[in-house]
Image (cartoon, rainbow, N blue to C red):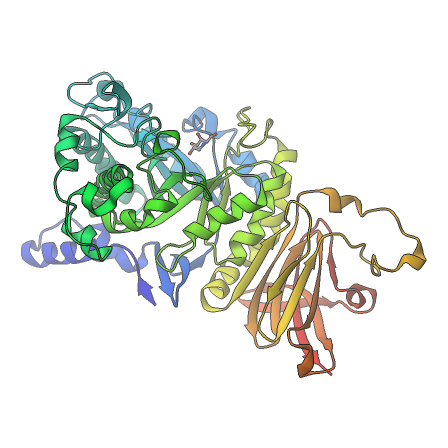
Length: 550
Ligand code: DGJ
């Protein structure tokens, strides 16, 4: 098992402790007990309290980061059965005047999260929020000389802050370090806060990079050796090494390096795992960098970000594509041996809920629809127009089933093969190759019989088959022994190679749950419940399926 974060911080802190003896008790000293990511054979888990933890998350709206709004956040989180709330901490609210900090909101938030038995992922909205500095304090936003904005391709002042100026970086990381120091003091033991997002959808729209004289001088200089070596390229200028991709590669490097320095300053105070999120670009077609958030961790620059920002454990996609083809292409770009698949934002309309199966079945460590609170805001067309208990329900039904076994799933997902599919837009069957067995996931069958049986004269379609909801996830517990969680579908099994035996049989199908890490069967499925595949309605169920052949 490989620790993928904070090794650097740990070494520095240890050296510091040895050399000075009198160092503050820093996070690195508590490191083994802090949340962190592990990677094992290319699979990932997020460890909290020493055990794998599955983030059944929800993100609050952008302006819900005040005590008054929290009253309308917690009921949605409870309705969802979420175990983790992602919520902003704005630079403007903790440092309204330079050098003087106000952590009263953070204190209230952490105390209330404990009361509600919910973990927190804090979102540090600072230099970049959807690329703009809107959440920076007024003393930053209004001082364009001290904190320069970028210059766009056409030579005009751009709205985004430039990543190339020390004063901006220093101010951001000083505030962030203060936040992390405070968090260590109030939460170092209890660890209600389990992770921190640095900035939000960084980069810039409307310009591939900063074209100011300062930026241009850097652009005309050599590509940093670390990057050239990591990419196995020849040394040279950005243009020489990256050709047409030079502008976006240069900007990605500098945004990532800036964010890395903010994260490192925070981790030197309190070494929680940190990540950056991406406003996504078209996963299929080339796109003019002026039309997407250039500089952010979009899929085309993940390799650059990985070198430039070693303090970040994860690069996470914000998925607002409803359609199956695009959404699953986004997931595929971010599920890598060096990057856990973690969906920190996805649309909150019902047709996004199905991706829960796909994400978890592809070793995802977490899932969190965006805008899940009852403050009266809906971000349609990205997500739902109205957010109420009905909006929350499609996610809640999934979380409710997973919540009691969240850590079991996270552990199994680290150690065992998993598969997962979300219902495709056209409702077509999907096949999962499990090795000896092949599973077919079918969205258009009644629970009894086969649609091909014309003699029964059935013409109606199952009403739920018209919904864009459902899917299946499977983990192999042992050979021929699977855990299957599914919704609104029929899952059938067959021999992958029909020549190897006469046919498949269910040795047993148990419906049950995990209790203290052990499988507990509540009943067996047989007869009608197994004769026509395993049929799942809108209520997801957990089955243990043992297969055999005759
Ligand atoms: C993605 C951003 O990261 C969120 O903060 C929010 O602005 C949504 N887009 C849109 O509601």
